[in-house]
Length: 194
Image 1 (cartoon, rainbow, N blue to C red):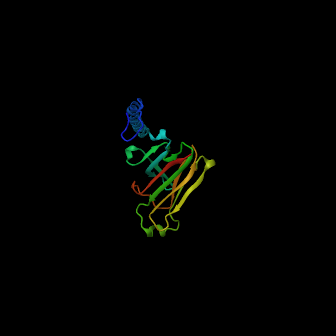
Image 2 (cartoon, rainbow, N blue to C red; image 1 turned 90 degrees about the vertical axis):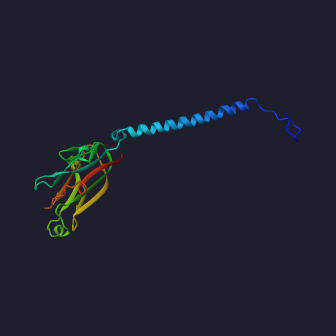
Image 3 (cartoon, helix red, strand yellow; image 1 turned 180 degrees about the horizontal axis):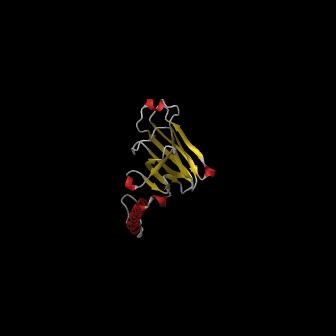
């Protein structure tokens, strides 16, 4: 069929309409399949427990302080306790044992009970908090050592390599006792990378 003003006849290919008619639904179908697959994958990842994703994490609260001769702080964790939990590491007699090698973020905050800035400064031996690997003995090392000086609360965190079987201990030396309030005294670890 010739167009007006042109001396040539324009030939239409008979399959061009068929291609256009098939291409639009094909592209739309592929886009819908892609969206559905992404949604399913997202839902599947959200339903996986943290252990299967490789995240070892613990947030613990103070359980009790041992006898005055024992400076160790004992911890507890679990869903029944509110905001504390253990996923990966475990508690062994109130101390945290690591089950996976890697780099961990270790954090702690301790607030002293019945404390004022003058009570921490007038003691000859200041109250000190230490976090370290206490077991196995071959890996025993101090990771954090903090002094209260003239304050009632200390908090710190650090990245450190930990190995499977390492047991972390927290020691509070001095005559002052830690607060049992879970918002003031807590301890935890988070696996960051291998």
